[in-house]
Length: 298
Image (tube, rainbow, N blue to C red):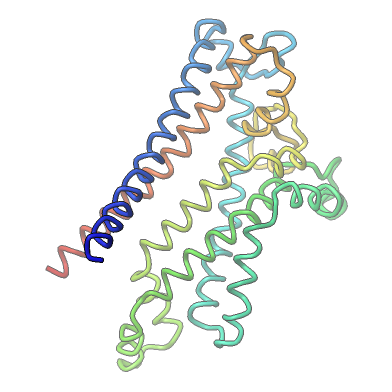
């Protein structure tokens, strides 16, 4: 029996190790494939063309700046909307809501994360875009603002769920000690609980932002798909085109091996690097906070 248990433990140990290594290998394989298909774009398309302000593949114009600018406008708008709302919602669920409300709200938030983005896009076309057009007196409701609102909706469940777990993991003795010193409940939340859960909250925000970077269907359906460089705050109320929407809209009909094909993979490399940078920043911040906490405790 002990022999069997020993073999079982070794099998589980190696299965976990292989699973961890395979995840790293899959990411490396995806990146290498993107490099193989995307790097030829630099030899086929002049750099001045790639850095131009026009995206019109039918005339061999592959300017990436409008797509990058449109993505940044939508992502920044979604971040500005989702992060404050997500953190406040997590604080309410973890610190303010009564137990019965917490038991209802937490599952609802987690269910929202499972809504397909195409369903949100359909909602945006049918309800959100017409409402924005009437409320803001716009020529069209298919704008960067509509995309930002939908992306905020997709990232909110991640931000709320992870932040709430981080806040809930703060020991109750911290709160009791703060209240015993005569500090109000709001001051305890703002000056003690949130700083104590800062690492988890920051991780939640980074994960939410990372999801907005890779979102495709929702922005493809509601942003208007106009490859125009954003200029000022007014671009939030105008149609834009994101990098993910461009890949989704054009990859199915592009000729394999053409310059257009390779440029689309170059856009994929750009998205991969942006997402990787966000994750590395989040990981480095969490690592530094953990090291600082260990030094304080030691």
